[in-house]
Image (cartoon, rainbow, N blue to C red; front, side, top):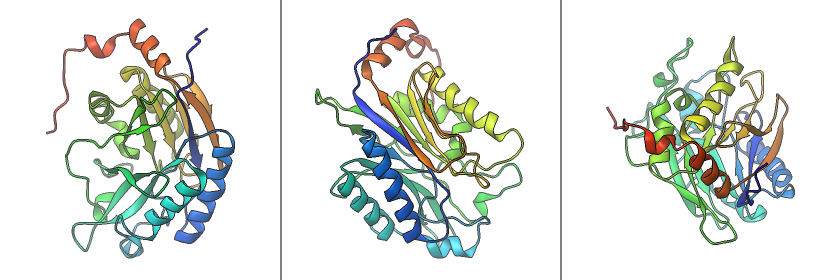
Length: 276
């Protein structure tokens, strides 16, 4: 049995965002408080936590806001109130009037933006056409941030979004940049085989990169739920089935070092990742 020390406590928070920013922030506050009561110093919420309706349309464009808008300001207030880093997705104003961006931000207590990550692969699959309303993020170096730990050397954290999980090179690129924990805020749409795909891909990304993964989804009926935190072996540390809830798990660099010593796959690989 591993005797790895605890470096940080991470939470995934699962809920069903609605078409009301204030209602979403209120729901998030309740979940964040619950997570922090369990010791969390980092709370991860789903993609599109700022606004969601079942069908993308003009209302989504109207709900888009800049990074200094009221939703991110609300996340800053929540981070300050709880003392935790808050990570959540929003509909961000696009670079053109007829498109928005699916953006995830990490906000520190005090309101500082620690990282911004824009969805790279749009969900033009399984009958959906996200690109009709959204634009993909630019191919630029990933922004990592750190979770403070007792020894002062924070765990490095990277972010990817929902459909990006189906592209293994996205996670590998984050790990190449130094990520030790990868967050996956998502609106993983329900459907045949989708729970299996979601849980399999989360654990696969952890195993192949020997990295922690924390993935937060919407509740059913829109999402599949099953938010989870897995370790660098792909073992589930904490999970939710379909309820609105927040669960926590400890993460440790000792664990990463142990797994990577036993399985030095990152050192043994013979291929790199470059943008197309």
